[in-house]
Image 1 (cartoon, helix red, strand yellow):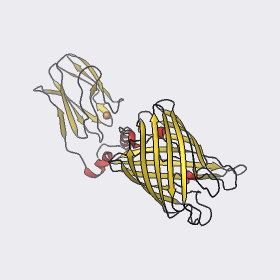
Image 2 (cartoon, rainbow, N blue to C red):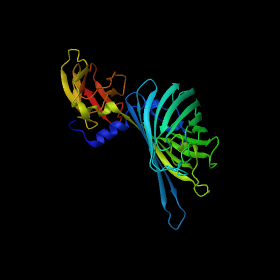
Image 3 (tube, rainbow, N blue to C red):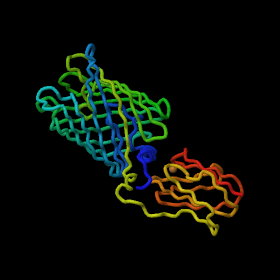
Image 4 (cartoon, rainbow, N blue to C red):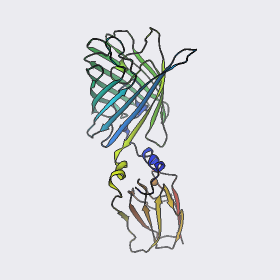
Length: 359
Ligand SMILES: [Cu+2]
């Protein structure tokens, strides 16, 4: 992995083409499990952070993060876990800790997150803090800019109670105002809640343009995003406590980390000079065409060589056909048969630009 700076790798991960099923907060309210399933070879990392600010004079800030990590195995199956370091869903009778861990599997049985019509996901889970077998049946219905969500949840031992069996129901709506912005609201509750508190949330959900990441700003009364935590509001003193926070969704495409383990990939030669001499070579490194303008004669060819750990393309602005994805250590040869000026760019990284002048 020579010549690779951390910045290149970060840009590479951030600009990876995101399959829609990876995860998008534009289709899910903060307290809804949703129907997302990462694609095969994708690890989904969601960082949810909520906080409560106590009234003055202390203005003490109480933090409630939930980390979600889930790996996609293809065929609509994912296995993952959630870890909430300060869940207060279960700090009632009998709770030993506020560290709430939930392991879960999910099967996307019908459709997929964001697809028109109905999508259904089945999520069996185990809550280690509650020693509870939990499960969620999530249903989404999407039409144009609107997604309606419903969830039925089963819980064998409710957190903070001595082994109480529970059911919970939740529903929500997400409205996409633009391609990048959505508003959402959801409400969920145990059917027979011990403390009578339903969980609610309101959120502004954003897709970060040109990236697979989504981000939400939220107000809620729930402290964790587990099946149990999303079903109960937090009101320790009987007051209606509002937590504010955000969630950030990060799909990690494992194949992008291959250079860490495999050294340089095999060279791959794409395109053909068709008998023409290669008059210029352009290396693609550090997300740049090294030699932004080259001049050749009609009937000659140019070779591009990818020295980056990410895929690039040579895409011409006009009608000249360009390259397929050029893998790391790959090359592409193109013969120019007409004089002219040929500006081009890289499709995944449009800020990478170059020009071939043919005389
Ligand atoms: Cu590129």
